[in-house]
Length: 364
Image (tube, rainbow, N blue to C red):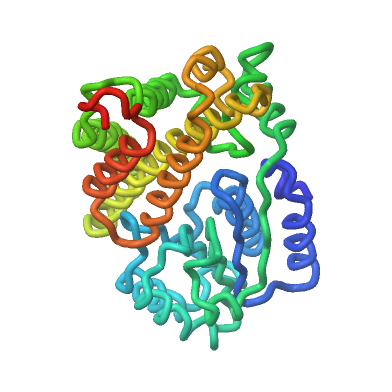
């Protein structure tokens, strides 16, 4: 339907949401699927239809919309308690109030337990929408009280169309659609020169692990941390600019809420950049396996096929597969509260052990 036209593909999700709007919504939904495939866009569009004012909801300025975002790497109990207090306030303007919980898979145990109480007996006017990148971390008690709305990885054709509408064409378009790997968030980063530079930095680290005899895991971890810190500063500056523009328009935000929003912006961007770096590392080691087996057309980093072909020696496939799994294991560890610096340094130590040639003693 027209409300979801900005969300490419996702026919099953759109069908379920259209039925909910036609027949009357349930009290709770769980949008789940890979990151970057349209869950957040769809959740905001769904909220706009439920409230009856899509334009104001899209701007997040409607008083009957409540959005909860992770603060850093978790959703803890205090923000959920704040939401629960708001949940028992009747609608200001619309017939319903809609609560969007982004990053629901990041709720810690206490937060999930607190939310469960209102999922069991919600007010009749409230609709709660949980948006999760994965189901595993969510307790069965939460999942069983929600209507599932599944989202799938996007086809290359859908991503290609999205990029073409933003001016890419020819070989650049083909490469970008492949590198995006079915995710619009990746596609969006490919349009950003600064994001492209960050990708090149991480790929240089991925190669240095096995090419540079003087490689230092601690320095590599610090380099990723520096990228994440820069992203955090950018996100804070953007959020401060938005707050200043709102203040100029006469919309004052309470200081406590502003401070929380700025911290969310910083920590969210920092976490996203670390996870993006891990995605990039994993994609490189996966491509070493792919190119080493002769399947060049399946490589994600197809703009760097010459480098991949140079590095994909006959003995590299097994080691590169283990390296990719080590990166994915580190990515999964960020579901929990871990020290980013220590986790990254431990990862680069492991990658060095897996990939560095045993010939020179200093590279062992």
